[in-house]
Length: 497
Image 1 (cartoon, rainbow, N blue to C red):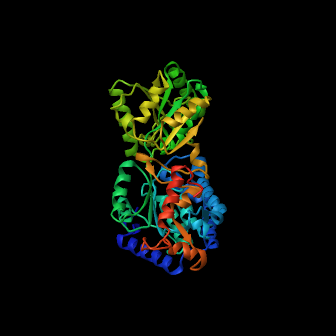
Image 2: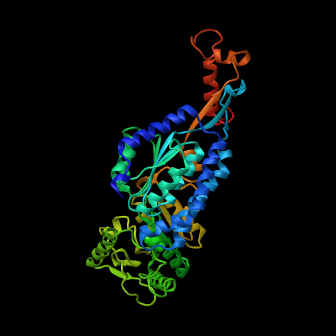
Image 3: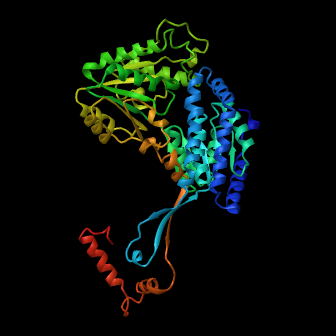
């Protein structure tokens, strides 16, 4: 990305001031205005789908058009469509229960949703459309303005989105800013009202530290090592196919991709054979030269993955490279091509066991007792996703109860990410906060409690006056109030009072 296209810190500060001033002067946007902003993005994506797909393909080198269409464009569209359908009901105040004695004098409680203000979004390169724009759907529904920073590692996509978004919205509503890590750091250092960051745990910690200086609340989606558990009664062949899909999608460059799979000892070889066979069926003419298999984003990322494999081989691990059907010739971009690779007997100290892989490598582990697998997973940082494959509902419940994770897909992998009515996010080392649907709307809203009393006359005034000092005067009801509340607590009748 050319230096002339990078957004300076001074320009970032100016944009923040413009957006905050507009929110102060105009107040919260109406529901109709929020719907208009959402509609504009829907039309923008629909009208420019081909150009967006072409830009992503150019950034990756090789990436199936279908993957970009459904995992980037369609998922972004679904987010805006869901927000458009729900925003009117989401914005309505919610009635809440009123506590004694205010419930007997006509008081009301409600929850209102205010715009937080200016929301920053820093997105990665692996799904450069979806991960940048889906938080915008939540922000627009909440009435917020947005400052968007796409990844410099997908420069063509970043430039195109900047041209489209900056041309469609006034800068007081939305602006795409460009640059490298320094621009991301400068954005995180601003006194934003919220920041949504998707990326590695290492960088997420830096972002959180920068935001903490201004007490800027954050939503962090950080990935980690997502485990798969194949149940004891599972169909190993069917499970292998589900795991293959989650692993080869975008060549494993997905925060939700399985990093390791636990199978029962007795079926490990059957699982490995089924995995290899599935790859051969999907890529009958070979993986590395296939247009259905995405490139690694850069040669440097490819070298990192090959280093993980080399370390595993040096440690004596069994390494199986799954190159598909007929042996294919080395592609012209061989440095950015890595075949799906199984790694067996990997020790815990290896990088492939301890680092997020973010590529098409999969560690295969075994268990004699399910409890051993659950203990292994639970002892490690909480993953962004957990996958259980098997027909046993009791075993499924045991797995889900034993392992904390950001989300879960049962009998498949990664699919919960595409459900717009489910919250999406991490927990612990894999992040915090939630995006998507109503949960994303709430995340990017100021959730405000409002207590309203009916006035200053009659019984209401009598009760309220009775709660004020001096407490030893005639007519003071504080002692009566406390006695009634404590009596209710002791007799477990809190809900009545």
